[in-house]
Length: 249
Image (cartoon, rainbow, N blue to C red; front, side, top):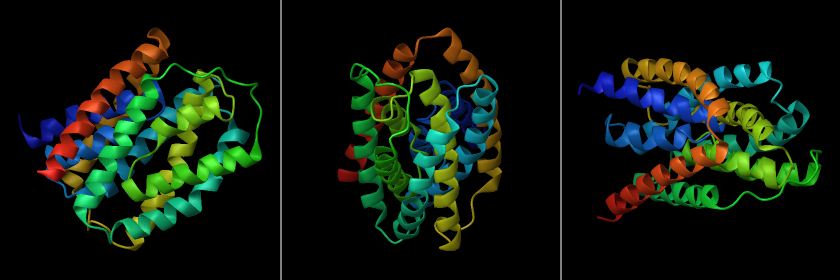
């Protein structure tokens, strides 16, 4: 299988995850870019942000049409993460690649375990400014540091902390992911993190991810969110274990 075909297949899977779950695509994108496409961890984080930003905007539009985006809650949550995402993105380029890989693997494993837990009962759908700001800032820092959109963390927070229904949390997380990814990407671009993206691979990867996001939106309407989360959590645990073994070998 050629590198270009790998990029197209991986892009479709990333888009499918983003469109159906409101996040998680970048958690797969980063290890694929590193282990299958030959990117360094820092370059993979930068490329992942480009891919996730474009794909999240597409998926956000699809969810907006169905009225599944809580704009006020999402805007407050996202705004709190802008500064942390920018600062963490600027710092990440100065850290050893092994440290970035290990940190990414740990976050992926924690996210998978969180997805496997039974969903918490959601309180009424209303804005809690303090909780939104705290959760948003933490998510922004993770986005900037590891180059992930953070939707796999945003969805549980929007449900359990801010009280959104699962369907609205998925749509709203895409707004948060888009804003955080743009802030982190701006920081990495300014710091020239990872050098120029390999556009011959990033371009096809992004295009396939955008198409996959539309399919993911339709998939979410046919399969229960719990089933999708369990499948995705299993994949995340396998990826995290592989990365931890690799970085400690």
